Length: 377
Image (cartoon, rainbow, N blue to C red; front, side, top):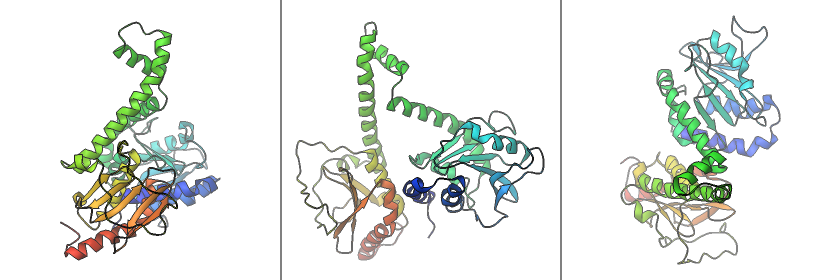
């Protein structure tokens, strides 16, 4: 059974998060994170020198003795250059000097600068055979942007499509920069950002006192806007019946076993609104990505409640696939056995759901076997 690019990336992200603190050197970063990225995510055989060349040296045009950490070969030619730094070291453009030099004297059209957690992908949009100063794609395993994964898939060994990557690179480059700029403004609004919105809604002169007031209002409004967009996104993902899936619903008739939170009693609160969070949506999409190997993805639905986010087969409370108990300091993933008995497993983040992929697939397979269904519909 082939594993999707999403699952491979999230698996590596979980590994990086768990072991990052113990990695102190560049060599350890390569072994623990970069080689698994090349091998597990991109699908190249790291032990086959005709696919992955470590300590790559070009024949001409570079400083004597200078090497690139890895060169990836596809179709008999070097296509991707990879330069590595320590995982504890933030990436800087100064780190890419060797990539700049090698890019000009090899056939490679893609260069990757990485510290094992962040992967910056470069090409030559600005001038032929000269590596750009800004990446066209940035994959951060600490905050994965799932919209980038289809583009990353085009660089894998099994789906290599360099022309498509280069054609999309210009748009990706600027969209990525805009998204990162927006994210920075949402986290800590600049004075220009605050002044811009204040001048749009405040009819009088924007004095220092008014600007100080809007320094609180702008991030609050931004947070509320993002929450609303998240809920709309979930509705769109779930289709026309989404309105019912994000409203409070009664818990499905299952019992909870020994791993349930000790001493905790879940009492409905009629005054509490159901708010679907980014983490719950990410968790839902991960569950979908996992079980799509067993069933058509449109059959996996969701219902958010006051206490947990439920994932269901066929939007049926009698067919619970998982429960995301994320409204607490310790997150739990609820999984179900053949008797629909729930066990809550402690997790640190939505990405840890991938560690329990087999249990989720087995749950769906059990439902399908009972209905005589096949894995595709």
